[in-house]
Length: 181
Image 1: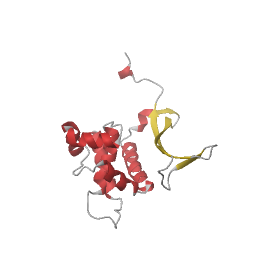
Image 2 (image 1 turned 60 degrees about the vertical axis):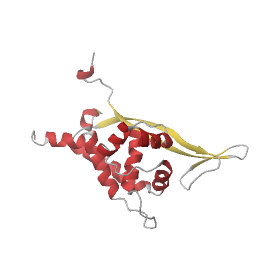
Image 3 (image 1 turned 180 degrees about the vertical axis):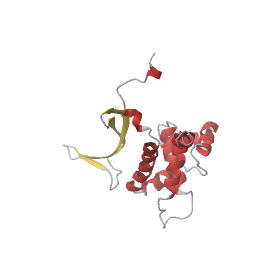
Image 4 (image 1 turned 45 degrees about the vertical axis):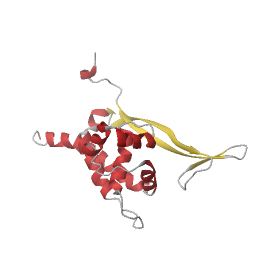
């Protein structure tokens, strides 16, 4: 058991999980009508990096990718992105991806964490984990919309189209002894 522990830790680290995401993204089928360009997995990993590097917008991410050496280095070494798409190209490519393919990537990372017994330290009540769920809007327009948009009809007849994102955090109500002051 001890011999496999470092191996598991490597796969449970941020670089290990990002590599797993990239491998999973490579399995997502490309749109066959698209002309050759930046590989889909580079677009998907760039989208993941957008959140991981805490860029407030696609445009600011695009600017950072062109001007910030730290961001360029992390995209290449940590996220494995060889060709960084501009904000418009990334938006076009990611709009084509069916959400169920992304769910497979998330499921692969959760399965890796379960095999590494990461979630066991968060068990609280019997065999359950506590989770906090929050939703936030990340797109809203009165004109621009897609088939996947949520739709809000206003009393005055106006329509707002929007997208929501959901974040789920696994939590534990107790502070580990190692973190107590």
